[in-house]
Length: 235
Image (tube, rainbow, N blue to C red; front, side, top):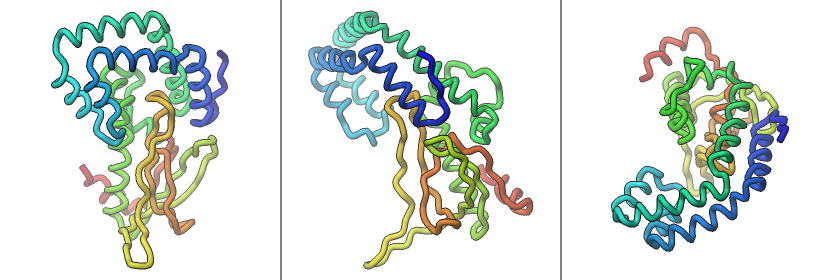
């Protein structure tokens, strides 16, 4: 497939097409049956609210499965992987994500996340987990809290590929009987790990409202020079 990926939404559309090509929905349904036949408790654990830490899910699953169950599950998984060319599917998904991020290698977020041109396997796994997004978002949160009442200037790419220029600052939640003003709940865009990017809300002083910013699509982040020293003290 020849994909033109000009935005995060385009990446998601391309991944939808690949999902159809490799019949991923069929793969998932067959895999669920395999898991259920191996151990119903595993399937129950996987169905737990997605807000639960995935590593905690893995821990819970591993404590409820015997070596015999694991051997059976691995064998069945290998058969399904070969049947649906799942490894090739993952390679195509990864290629799309890599192309998307390569076109944005000069973004502030990319420079912060990776200071080398070549990523190792552990970095790839860590990135797909979304951990880098959270680390960078937390750093920005701490920065604007540190320099309050001053602001940060941010240019970011929205989901449709448009560059947005704004100013964000720290704003404490305000809760009264008549009004609630607080940061929006973190969201994740995407249909799988390859287009999953954290959207965190910040207070936009131009709009006087909270806005979602795709953390990995921050193009540029600036502040007044006299504030840099304060930000550099953040660990």
